[in-house]
Amino acid sequence: MRCHSVKQLVLIATITLSSAQYQSLSGYQVWALNGDIPNVSIHLLKNGLADILDFAGPRKQISIHPKNLEEVDRILNQEGIHHRVLIEDLAVYLESRDVLRKKRQTETCSLASCPKPLSESFMTFEEMCCKKSCNNIPPQMEWYLINLNATYYPRVEVTSIGKSIEGRNIWQVFIKSSACNEGTAIWLEGGIHAREWISPAVTLHLVNRLARDCSIGKLFDVYIVPMANPDGYEYTWNTNRLWRKNRRIIPDSDCDGVDLNRNWDFDYGVGASDAYCSEIYKGVSAFSEPETLSLKTAMEAVNQEKNLILVIALHSYGQYLLYPYGGRTESAPFTTEMIEKGKVFTRAVSHSHETVFRIDNSGVAYSQASGATDDWAKGVLGVKYVYTLELRDGGSEGFVLGVDKIAPSEEEIWEGMRAILLSVNPSNYTLL
Ligand code: 0X9
Ligand code: ZN
Image 1 (tube, rainbow, N blue to C red):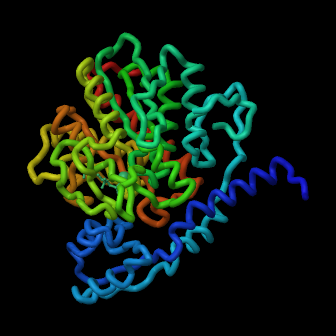
Image 2: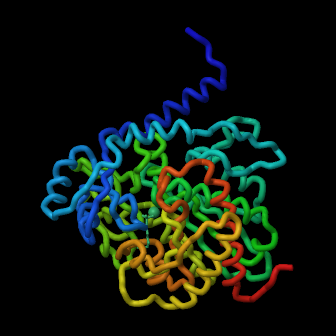
Image 3: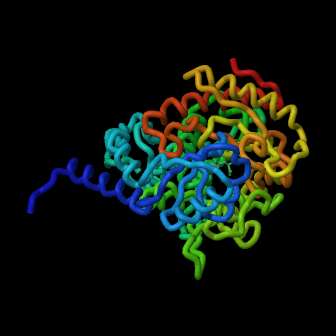
């Protein structure tokens, strides 16, 4: 038997891992639809026959499970909608692109810079809390969070707000303000949709920035859940890179998972589906899922004790800052103010890399849908400023954004975050 060096073993492990992410997408096709298709793609999504890949755009690109290809073809022909195959086999396509995108195990951390999230690789959930020392390669999101707690406690406190359906911790980072604005809180949620990898990556970098920053950090009590759907996220690493939902196993069904952003108890069911196979399956009832129940309970606790003034749920992709409601046509309270502060955010975001983020109502820019974090935070908790932030990109790489976009994304979002935090700051405390 040949002996492999540690470096070779790491590389082999990485290659095996990336192949596994794509295996279950074997035979999936991506089609581009032509013509006037107002509701057809939404209909296919709700019935679990296809997934919409360009939600922020004209909804003309769909991915289809091999067993549904004929049925979708039949429906499109019946509706007179022409289509062409963009990608013959999603697994082959993603695998071929991955060669160029892979970059792991290159970053180490020194004791001086630890703990810090990775900038050149997406982190596995484990990397984000096991107790590995800085000298171990690779640095482990659970690793990062636990080390963060050890380094910055008591100013920073990392606690579990509950467990996912497979028993993983849902971590909350609490970064405490000093005296200035004590009692005013903000809430950031990352990673509720498993495949949107840039969301937890950017959220962890925000944690890092806020924990180290002693100026903006003073303004608010900041609560951050960087990984709201750890099981789904792990599943994207091990089995299906494009998995969106949580990992609830549904007995007697071919399909698993609940869309956690359709499971909240506000306008529950609007723009969601009862079909198990749909990417927007809403679950058996509002808050049926341990992940959403944990988030809700933690948010309620913060809101009871403090003035929760801003909630941002980080998603991808589309480069949009969306404000509620997503499931009603009436304006939500403080819409004018949300737009005004939203512009402050998007303007600041564009400074570092000239990336254009648009601000719009979620029901208009995406599709009428509720049961989501944002609508619940606005409609039930009554938070003044509520947004869903759809991170990079505009659609060229989509969910499988390259690792080279982590650093610029987190840089620009930090600029936006600094600006909006200063702007919504109720005491008008200015930083010198
Ligand atoms: O559909 C979603 O859950 C979000 N878009 S994504 O592509 N990341 O899945 C948008 C949610 C916007 N908010 C509401 N519709 N309430
Ligand atoms: Zn999302």
